[in-house]
Image (cartoon, rainbow, N blue to C red):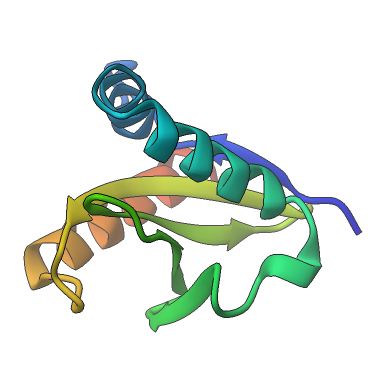
Length: 117
């Protein structure tokens, strides 16, 4: 069972996760390669569990990479074997901050409103 991974885009055409990946590629090529490998692995249902992926509630999940700074990409599943990457976090904290969770939930709600199933 193969999933596709898509990146959230705002109504104005901005793609925050892509911007994060572009910055990461410039600042730390090794972490960039690891995060890209993780996103690629999400295409397989086998990796939709720990240690690569973990549910964080509200139908949100995190893709985790431990490196110089921890990188996380928050995402959710969409009908049709699709994964939508919503938000990125790069820090050493073990817990996801409430402001980051809110950003992901707001983007999820925005995407669902603009893309009714």
